[in-house]
Length: 134
Ligand SMILES: [Zn+2]
Image (cartoon, rainbow, N blue to C red; front, top):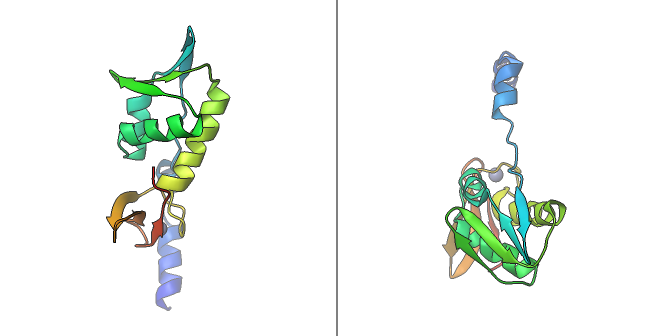
């Protein structure tokens, strides 16, 4: 048996439960509107799950929604009224741009600066890909 076959055999022998546990679920925005503002109440949870700085995520929302906002006690408060659907669409863009590996699509990446430019580096496959400067 060659190495590849052995590896495949070993992988197949792992119970399905383990695979299910390993599958990564992206976080979902939970928000509410308050007057003319929109509050993302689970900002810290999102940041922890994505292993990104909450300020970085907030900056992205502000830029994408062309508004202003601030961080307050675990929440991101945006000026203007936005729906969960709008916010989750932006969060998906964020995850695609700044979190998921371009090569293997795993979320285990870190943001680094390489030769003065921002990149995400994958801890799984080692790929390094440029990301947009925020
Ligand atoms: Zn990768």
